[in-house]
Image 1 (cartoon, one colour):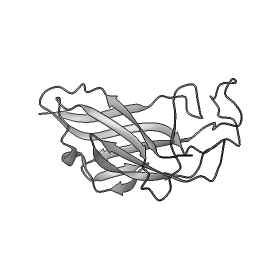
Image 2 (tube, helix red, strand yellow):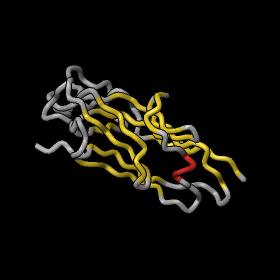
Image 3 (tube, rainbow, N blue to C red):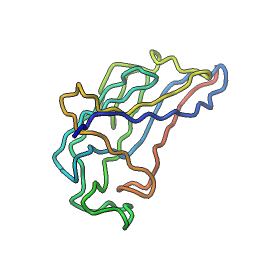
Image 4 (tube, helix red, strand yellow):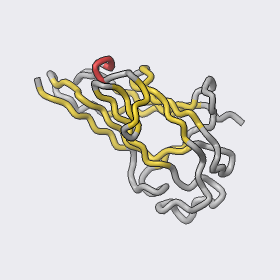
Length: 157
């Protein structure tokens, strides 16, 4: 069974001409993807924006010992139930997951402006040390009743 792969999202860009991006934030509920459920199933999940690697985080497992708070009744009990809520932040100092620095890539290097097409990628690459897949949860699933949320903090020039 393969556990590598990726998911990409094309993000809307509502920046006005002349705006300077100071910070990019994306919040999501995420876990590994094991056959069935496996609480101890590490996965190195890589994050990139427009092809630039932002860094990676290791998910500890594919959680299903308990039912997710928002997981629907029709969802099979032997499938993953919930993930961990993560906040990825890119600013001038670097890239952070929940406030912990994961890379020196920064918002200036990404060069985002009003004309930029933004494609965000979650990946479990076949070259990772821990190839344990990816599960993303949205509203109505998992323990956090939210879809993926994106926030761009900017200043007008």
